[in-house]
Length: 363
Image (tube, rainbow, N blue to C red; front, top):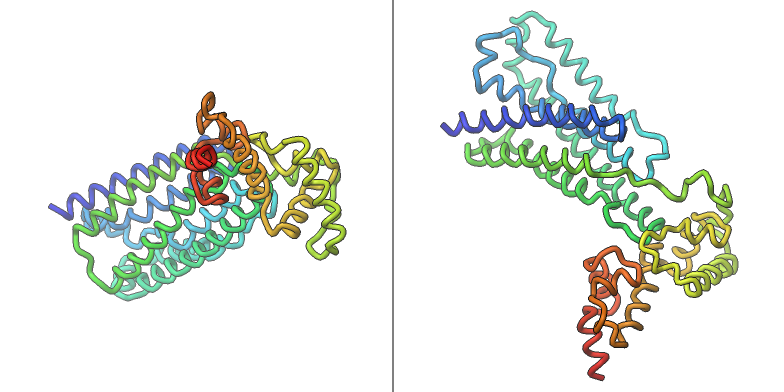
């Protein structure tokens, strides 16, 4: 009975993955990056098809389907890497299509094996060839996952250098997904050497089912993170500052930045970007980021949030909370939400806004 349930869950996962993948490819006309996510979901779902063919004894009744070339362990995570590149802040840079080459080669190799006579396929099936190919494919997937994680770290760093508000721009759901996949691949490698209990197999199958649905929904609602530092209408086309410039040159620009941010209170703008400041100062946004990073050793997001926190501290020393909620105060000083305000305020002061307000009034 357990085996039948597991097979049904796998079958449902394959059907769900195929349907959601096709939907994502269909809507990719509006958002081209979802094309790669759709391909990934289809490949991810088909990976479980050989298990279903085995469980439902389809291969026994149709031996011609032996060695069907539907193993995509070498290519599905490179496809997801391309998706991450397409939605990241580095989408303007050249996409790394060469990581698909091992996957394409593996599919062609499997297709050639599929064309062999049934006797030869039966013989190969009894060898360790496919276990070795599968294990190598999983290892390559782990390598790609590590690369995706490194890429996401660079993406997050650059987002914080360009945006004062990073909400929905850090691609956190992709981090969760690759962490889950890292564990899943490790488990798959373990199953090559240790027999897994049916209950554990069922748990993995159900997890895959939930994961595929979650990834599809996340992909639908995820907008591309557009780099504001590469807009075509920038006042200065090329940066004039780099990390090797002398302190005097950096100090000159940082003084202009500080004065403008203080005098204009531009930090209260919720959707503030580095371009807003660079446009006002008629410099390249990269120069603004470099100056802040080099002089203060901070990113743009942290730099702007410090102005917001100082403004909030000034307001909390008054009776402002009589007429304004904490959420209202957070928006007043430029934060998108109460949660982000609480996090930034506590990180900067070591206490919550309400406690700070209470302590100030008591003293």
